[in-house]
Structure formats: structure tokens, C-alpha cells
Length: 146
Image (cartoon, rainbow, N blue to C red; front, side, top):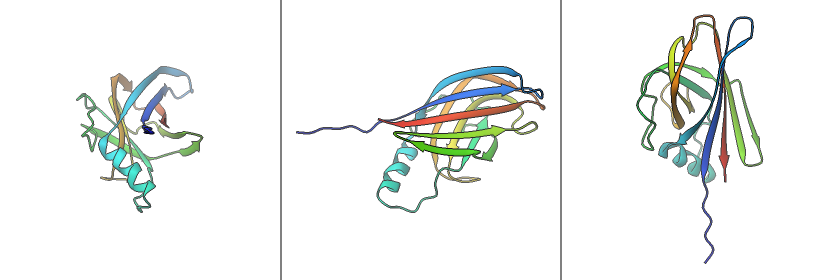
């Protein structure tokens, strides 16, 4: 019997910069592809017309990521993705939260397919990144199918 398992795993690179473009903080963290995200992928493979992933959100929630998550715990900002690139088994989502957007003690992030509501593909929680009013936070989020 032939048995092949499809796994979706994610990894983030978070870079906080000041107004001069100098790096203040840089983190690499793994994420959880949630059940709703896996269902989304399966439905798209089946030809469903669900909207593609188009937004990234950040927040201040500290509740651990769980498979049943459908939102961030405490969303503070959501913006349209800067870019989306698919190569081989990877899809890379990039977004920048500019100065004045999502300011505060950021501890979570997610990828979604709408400007509000929508389907959550993946979510992660990390130790606090203090994003000042003049700082920018760029997140490069890679989801790999293996």
C-alpha cells in the first residue's frame, strides 16, 4: 500500500526597523497551519472559488496558537500583502506594517484571505516585539508543502 502524507509547515522572519532603516530587532519563528487553513488548501485543490490569501495581521494576544484558531487572539492591524511568490513547494507571503500601523507590544501574527473576517491560514505567537510609532515591521512568511 502506498502512503503519502502532505504536511504544511510555516516559518517567519520578522524584522523591526527604525526610520533610518536600521534593524532594531530580528526574529525567526515557526508557525502553526491551523485546521481552517488546511481546509482552505484542500478546497482550493478541489476547485473551490475561495479567495486567495491576501492579508497579514498582527496583534497583542498571547494565547498559544492552536489548530482550531480562526482569528488572532487580539488583532491590532491588518494590511494587504506586499507580495506573494510561489516557488517549488513554498509560498512566501511578505508584508510590511509601516510606521504608525500596528504600534505596540506585538506578540502574534496570521495570514488571512480578507481585509476583515476571512479564513485564517496560519498563526504564530512569539515573545514581544515592541513596535514604536516610527518603526516598521516586515514579516516574510514561508509556508512549505512537504
